[in-house]
Amino acid sequence: MFHWLEQRPFFFAVGVFIVISFAGLIEILPNFAEASRPTIGTKPYSGLELAGRHVYIKDSCNACHSQLIRPFKNETDRYGMYSLSGEYAYDRPFLWGSKRTGPDLHRIGNYRTTDWHENHMWEPTSVVPGSIMPAYKHMFENLADIDTAYAEAVTVNKVFNVPYNQPITMKDGSTVTVKLADTIEEARADMLAEAKIIAKDMKNQDIKDAVEKGEIPQVVALIAYLNSLK
Image (cartoon, rainbow, N blue to C red; front, top):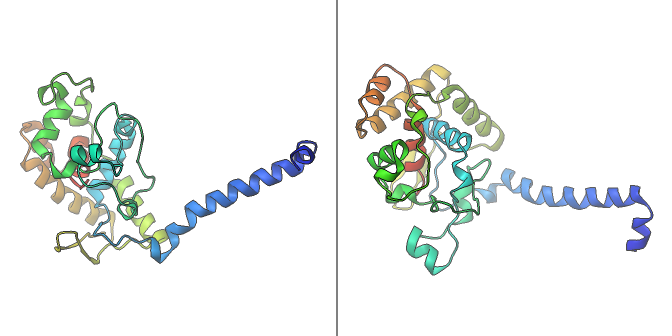
């Protein structure tokens, strides 16, 4: 059979295409199924968290940090509860990763504070002696892309029917509702309100002043995203 295919490259190419297409459908179709919805209290990302996730991807944080805790004692002892598939229902694309130059970040929202993240992004060695992570001081000056974050939220809501504006029961039994604004102006106001909560716990006065003026530095959005990883 293999010799027959090797002698007929057209049919071999068709066979490869069919196999790859089938594998792709297996990965894609569950996204549209009701059964793929999380049942473990996972909530959609807010607009500011999405903006922070874009910063996280843009600066290649996932190149050195994974977001997948495997079910082994040495990992759960260090990082917390192992990861469950439903927790990635709103990740497009997922950022599991496998390389750990730095620690896994899937549960970092449980044990790091806004103040810690601020110091870590400004000067990593100030909180982690010996760290080889570079400083990301440009995040304190550059502004988050609010419009793109809102556009993504609207798009995924239309395509995947993400449960924005619906009450969601969290793991601790509390109920939260993640708002999706009707207009970009409302979205900016919502993100700014969320940014003010983050900036309140930061020490950098320039960041506080920028947020008060209605601007959202990248570091604020990034911290919002990191704080959501629980």
